[in-house]
Length: 154
Figure: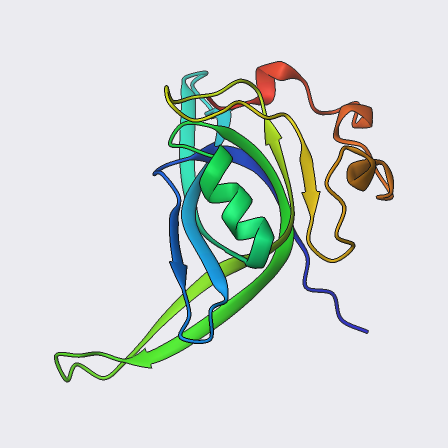
């Protein structure tokens, strides 16, 4: 048995970028930052931020482009995938690892003027367009007793 599942709660580092493949499929790309905080041996607060590349396909990608903006908080589920391509400058093969998001929940208020605010959950695999998508999971983010609002890095 193997499992390839990623769950991220973080903030967008850039506005989403929506493109279409030659066959007309929508693909949305953006980055999400997660920050871990801890106290070192001397008691000083330390932080480490990780950046995650996210890819969202189809109608869900179009909705991400419509409702998400730089700074907006998002909960997402998906799987890791690695892509390879040949560098244009002849520098050999290049690789990137990204999250292929299947379920996204827009959290908090709108981070950018001009984009509508929407607190809703989107689940690509089941075609759901409401918060019931999150309730059908084996967990609820609010039910995790180890997660508090102080744990949010921004």
